[in-house]
Length: 289
Length: 292
Image (cartoon, rainbow over all chains, first blue to last red; front, side, top):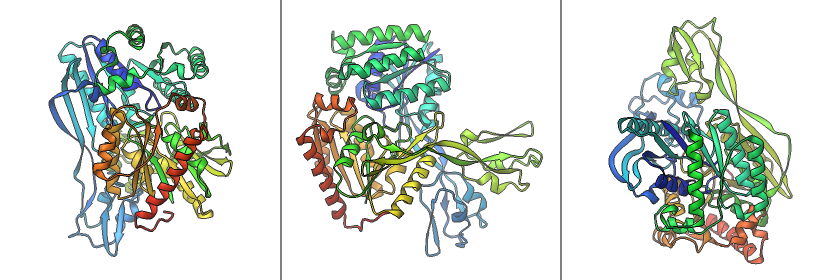
């Protein structure tokens, strides 16, 4: 089974638009949106939810006021400034609580509760391009890495049950927790960048992350004609570091047009960018083995 | 006054807005790049930076000779950072959240405070502006503990000076984004009018509203996409502070590392007006605006 992941370091480079196009082009796959924080792929694929499951992860401390003597041990031991004191009353600020259980364990009165936390919802859905696994973390919640790991497991399970050979995933921006979790076990990472100082800088960081975890990767330069010199520098970087250049796509408002029509750009008939994306996909399939 | 420039979706123009706002700000200013996973502000403001200072967090270190294998630390740890295999304790420092619980619970003093590198903090100056940025170490999963340390540095500078602060936040609506807006006086949400931009803007608005801070919107690439964002802001009474038109020449200027407030007089005026509207928003909020 192959896992191909689309990431970018920097947001707004076109990851999701490209993932939608690849979902249209690829045969026999499970589609995953691993950007559980701010997912967008569903806006293009209009999934019909077949299964909807609450996601619980971690715990949250809650002080039971009846037993609390106001000794303040919890506030002294909390490293996250999550315990608030007003007069003799201690409460937990849920936004700052890390769920580390230190206050629970050290409370002399054993009066701090530690319920599980409902952090979001995940779905298995049908789309016009096949089965999709996706989620929405509640705004402001943590544990995105765990939710990403869960989605990947579910996708693998579905793929095995249905003899499907490919998992195609849209990743999150950045290089932190959810991205690291997305990379685990992936066969190939498609790095989408744009010819801007930020695009190049973030590409270098996310490519280093892939190297760090020994994941093979290739690069797509989106909006390449916006700044041909910067695009040439990115190409040079790819040659030096042996990252295959998968495509140079033009800056084309048809991408936004497709987004407004809620379609994949390759569904809009013959366009230059559509042809380039098809070639890139063929190349990715070869490289991902 | 601390202003945080945030957005749900990446690539909407947070850094563009932060850099432009910084160049038109007419009072002593500190800018902070808190997008530590992918800091970009220095690529536009070209600060002269001092040497980097490494930031660390506390993680446990084991003195195996003292460990009796009681397992109290394993039981306490909520982050799978300690496990017991064949009565030998194994630590996974990358998983540790630094709560200190294992060290506190160990009766034999077998666990002591060690450290894990989180990233590098740099300070410097871009013209008259104090500049501060953090760069997360490649492979480090947790950005909030590192962001807290960058913020501590920011507070330190604030104690010594009486400046305003503009923070460039990471994208998204989960812990790193919350960490960057939580101590600010005003939140400026940057979005574009595309369906993706609008969808993620709504998430960000939902996520930050409970903090009760004055919030306003900058619409980037205005004219592209749909009118949904305008209808939503009207319905929810969210002020639109500025609109930056969709124009290929702006995208090209950005791609050359230029601060777009300097690209034309019209754009300069947009950011001067944004500056004034942010001040009005802070004043109107009815709260005393002070340094946190």
